[in-house]
Image 1 (cartoon, rainbow, N blue to C red):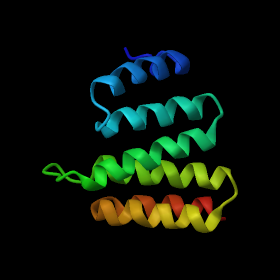
Image 2 (tube, helix red, strand yellow):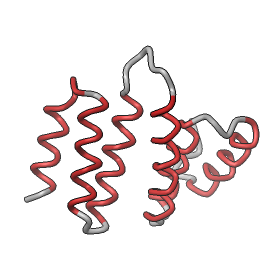
Image 3 (tube, rainbow, N blue to C red):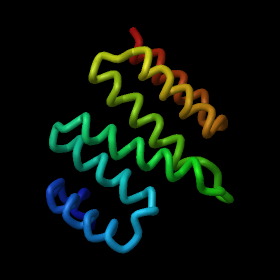
Image 4 (cartoon, rainbow, N blue to C red):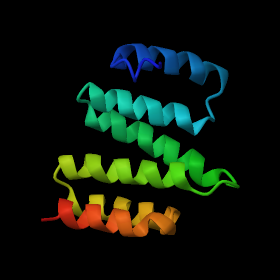
Length: 116
């Protein structure tokens, strides 16, 4: 199990710091950091990490689809909703749909529920 799965957000951040020292261009690490910061209630830090992950995933050629990029955008949308930033949340949600159109219906349903 990972530190995140064990609920150890601070431990996950420390492990991610080590991983970033080895490869700072690996977007999954930033995604893990975003999740850890959210667990600690630090939404601004989580958004910063998500933006780094999104930038890196956008630059990568994907053979297996854009699922991780889409997931990062969807997570960003959720965090922006919590910050009461509906326009920015909608933009992030639309980016999630654009990154993985095959999941578009699911994301659109989430958006509709969140905007009620």
